[in-house]
Length: 360
Image 1: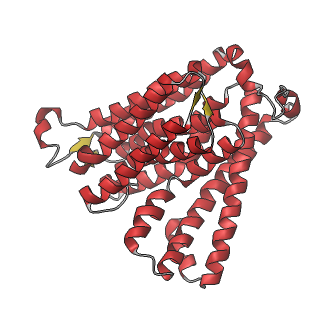
Image 2: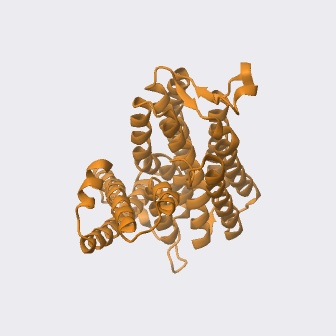
Image 3: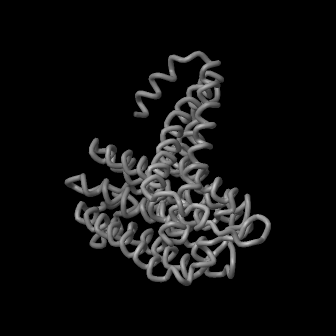
């Protein structure tokens, strides 16, 4: 799809490129609005907290592009790109996207819901690193790298199914304790009976509109990035700058727009759930599927152990500590720390690998 879009936009006059960019941004904004609205509606109808909807259904939708890219890269033998897409997305989702969201506004934290998801995110990141380590020859990781076995890919996919099943089941079993979160307060401070407002909508219609929202966000992202790249090239912006910003930023755009829209609409729980869920899915779904389709498993280049794995562990550790120290909400200070961690990784990525930006 990206190759087709790139070919089409490369033939457009500069004026039409600006029109395409403006149109893509408009579709992106509308898709994000629809996605957040229908996710909240689904949360109310099913009696499932918004954080859980964000961590499962919304995250699955916004992570599908990364999974497709990684699987295709693995099939073509580009295992570094396949795994880098997953690891780089975790760093960008947690450092850049959640960091920016916290600068926009605080995100409520209900420990009973957030803690399990946060520990799964934290454990998944460590598990990814652990399964790639050559324990028999650990001294070779900085020269030869490691490997994620194909069997580990199938195990990750099985864990993905278990994670989604257990998360939905757990949230339904405890939904009486989430009544306050499911029926939020209105802007005037009075409780809004959203169940009554949305009760007439059929679940099937909500699911269709949710799918349309996800499609609009993903499709607009795939049109916007090639159009911006082509425009930058014609305006003589250096290639290194394009690679360090637009390319690395592109695959995380669906999550970014969804998270920022959710925070802006005062559904911070949905935003946090989307980031936590996307990180978990990048390990279990994206890297798992890529390894499962590769007979010899995924080769892990040495620079992952020098920079990208430590950076991934650092950002999820910062978030884990931030959640454990927060009583009711995540605040702006944590956002600055996460953003700083992301920027350090981008700069270090250029110094260590010679390629600007985190791997995507």
